[in-house]
Image 1 (cartoon, rainbow over the protein chains, first blue to last red):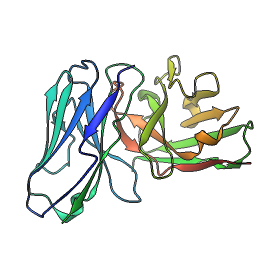
Image 2: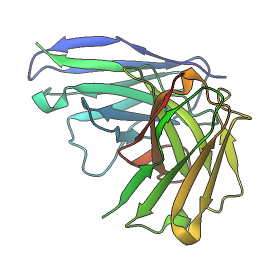
Image 3: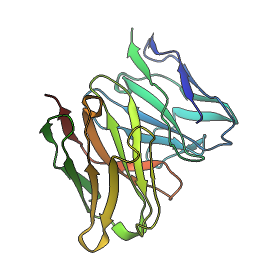
Image 4: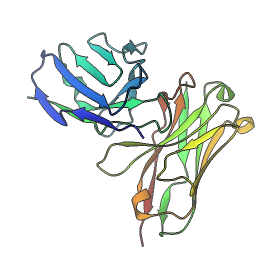
Amino acid sequence: DIQMTQSPSSLSASVGDRVTISCRASHGIGNNLAWYQQKPGKVPDLLIYGASTLLSGVPSRFSGGGSGTDFTLTIDNLQPEDIATYFCQKYNSVPFTFGPGTKVGIK
Amino acid sequence: QVQLVESGGGVVQPGRSLRLSCAASGFTFNRYGMHWVRQAPGKGLEWVAVISNDGTKKDYADSVKGRFTISRDNAKNSLFLQMNSLRVEDTAVYYCARDLTANGYMDVWGKGTTVTVSS
């Protein structure tokens, strides 16, 4: 099975900063990657699919990129409401594995 | 509005069974594949199972294959997860989730139901 890793596991940044989270697949998955945001005590929310397509209603400060094995989620102009854990997920084939998550905090 | 509501969680001894349900509303249920995803306390997300919109195709994570069965009743807008031979490591919040385009990613999630496996 394809393994998913994320880095860093956690980070702290200041309001207004640009934050980049990496997600890596152990084998190529094309652009079959989604990103989810899970705020503390809440259910996950889909942010991005197709590696870079923003779900309708998601703020434009979020963006995704990459293909194959290396992907990124970027948050421009970090806001206090962006405090959350972010998960990538591959969906090229079963199992639809999630990455271990990156916890984003505010300095 | 679009909504998924899970039920059926509880505390159960190892080796016993439990059946989870997920009631869907606000959308045409039979047009969408559906997933179960779980999250152990303080841990990340683990995909559990998926079923196609018509119920003919099912897939499972290796960790539950042979023990869990996903099913659906489109006439009742309901999704199910039959969990047999439960293990301590199955303890988690179980979410049902809608597959946006039958490709494997999930755009609507329920609030989850908690399953605790403990002796």
